Amino acid sequence: MHRRGFTLIEVMLSLLLASAVVGVTGVVAVQSVQVQRSARQAIFSQWQTVRIVGQIESDVESAITWLPGDVTPVTPAAAPGELLRVYGLADAPASASLGRYRLPARIQYLIEDVGNGNGTKRLVRKVRDLTRAAPAARRVLSENLADAYVEVRKGKTWSRPVGLSKGNEDVQALRLVLRFVSQPDRAVTRTFLLPGRQTERRAS
Image (cartoon, rainbow, N blue to C red; front, side, top):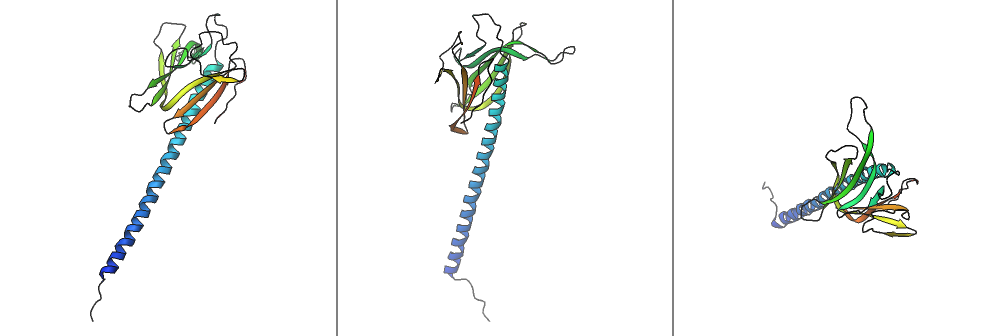
């Protein structure tokens, strides 16, 4: 009894079928990895948004309203590379006798180039204690921003300020706009009313 072998056509069909199965499996695997990566990036961007907005909201609410007339408590885009400047109350270093307490400080939110060649920006919170001569404390809030800026509302119009040194009487609110590298076409916005008014939040 002779054992029948595979014909050339059968071998070719088997190879073709195997190639198709491997190709489909590879496509599904690649798509699965892309979906997981996008989900991770979206979650990370959302976490950073909550972190940034919560910190700015806290600083704006702590703004000092009894400053001299030539100093504005909350100033957007006061200098090149500066997103926002707040004269408010910030956490001071822990003390054995007083514990955690808050002191008057100048709080700056700065936009810096990460330096990776693709325009990625970082957002830095810089705090300088106004009660003593000490180096400013820096903390990086994000290093994957495609863009970040603030707008001011006067009446019913929103506009990007060139620099406001004083006189925020007619500025009703500030709007923070963030775009992350992972989702550059999606703008995340939050609106803050100036001190003394109720803070509202909006997202788009």
